[in-house]
Length: 225
Image 1: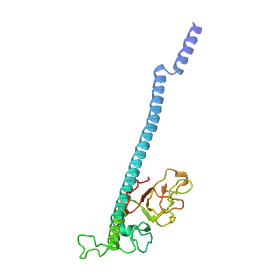
Image 2: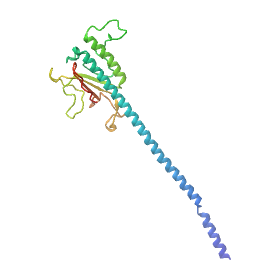
Image 3: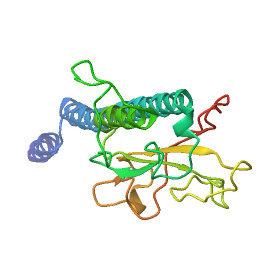
Image 4: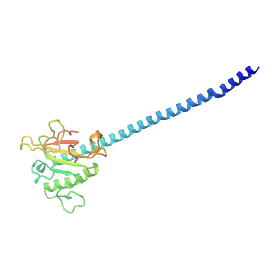
């Protein structure tokens, strides 16, 4: 009888020391919830990253389109005032510039403005007034803008990349006016960019993002983006 009591006591203790199936189920359920939360968090972070990239891409596309439109507009102004636009001497052609933000022409003019008290005296004055207005709008549209307008027979380097430098051609042979525009934008190569992850148009090794060739008085070429 004593042996039976001892055996019963041992079995009772064994059962008391083991967790019930419900306790095991509760533990597994908690782990599953935690894992689900972690997986969901990674998913949300991924979606946020995709959304941020989409917004950045949209912004860059908008800036690219604005720059191309402004380059086309300047080309049309040079063609419309081709007696000045065809001159390759910067002292005689106000359209020829090399500026970076803040953009301001050497000789601002506002003779084309509605509030101007005097009309533009000649084609040079028209060019200065058009350039003044155009630079103001370019500076407002593009962050950290840089613009070069020159006669350039080699707007691309040996690797096919656009370049800021201008190489003069032979008069009447390969002289083509080229509009080059750049601006500050987010880098696609963060490891090689500055600490804040941006590429500036004035940095060493930078290149114009829009190159628009135009021969004054002749049909315009298409923009190179």
